[in-house]
Image 1 (cartoon, rainbow, N blue to C red):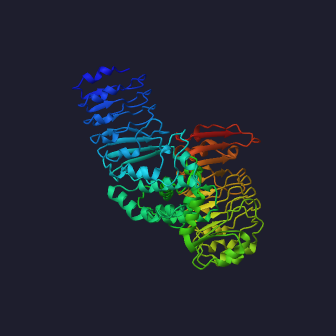
Image 2: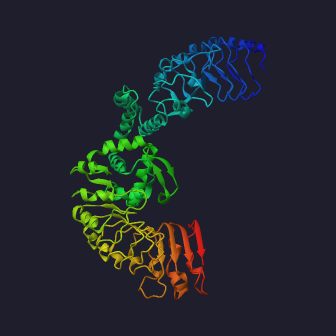
Length: 581
């Protein structure tokens, strides 16, 4: 307790009572110390109120009450302390029973600087009027403004709030707004709008840019009550052009689809959306930077995974609507006969049901995707001919899980192809040799083609190949000779040693120069390696610094007495080493 006689220290200019955890109330007489410049009460966690008549402290410039979590209100008259430069906390009176100050008392406190926390905002009545009366837009010296709807806030006015701080503000923090907006009819979509606008403002570096955004653009859409898409569109309009292309392309995914980030980046690369200005970064690294920039602006959500090759994400349904809107006629999801007939000549990118491919003749089509869940039986050999005849400009072809029995040798005519996904076809046993003539190919995905027996000879012709996915291709008998010349390879999910040499396959030495490999590598049939010590060393695993996981497999039926691991020593960066057999 503070003695009421403290007022007799009439020459006092600085009074620090911070960290008095049992202090619950200040004597009214403290307001008689009219020379007082600074009153510090930080971390007085039991303090319930500041003294009435606080307006008598006419010279007060610093009133610090940070972490005074028990404060119930601010005293009326605090708004008359126009010399205040520090007011660390302003507490709204929850139910009005304390006769506390309302937000309008902040109107003239325009010398406040540093940090201001305003709490219990859900209990503000006539919120739109009171926020305007607080005159936050004139507080040019504030650096950080914290607006707090507490977890236990239950009442309040959840109508439109117009919070306009001064453009000089460096940080705006909104706490508890998730609970606050959940009571409105738009729920989480409001939070999406807040995050998206915040992401856009984070790119504005000067006060003039903030002011221009508010006056010239945000003002245009403020009158469209209940419409959130225009707000999201505003953030899209402020994206750099390269990010606009990348975002619009995502309309090809079905709503609520879990997007594989690495595949998405590869699609962008194939379409020429990624610009390599710095040779020290790969196209994928730059593309991943694009993805992260869109995440920061809330164009993607529910991001899972740490490494790009493992990452998945989703788009909010409203963001998908926005992508569809801005993509216009250049892309379409074709899932009905009507849509197929409506697609015009300007369409460049489609995701489509296989049965509808015969209805679509897109001579300038650059993307053909299939996202159907489960196995489709609609794909015939004739469909191959239609694609090859009508879609010679294709750069991305994703035909996984479509019941394909055989790949047409004419696929080589798709010479502009960068991305080819034939995953999850259990009946494909062999690939046509002509596939090696598609020299622009960046990614060839064959994962879960369980019966695939071999990769094509002359694979070294695919000089730009960065990703060769053959995960769970358990019937592969060997790797083709020349695979070691594909020094751009970053993904090689499996390397199969030729058991008896009858297939003329590659040996481990072909791994020597593949030092850009990353992610996971599985090497099988190691028990059949001849001159094991020499070949193990030739594989040069110690130089593969980007590998995350390495699986070394000796089959269980092999009788091998030369399982020395000394020469298979991996790089120290390796996170997981698995040894089987």
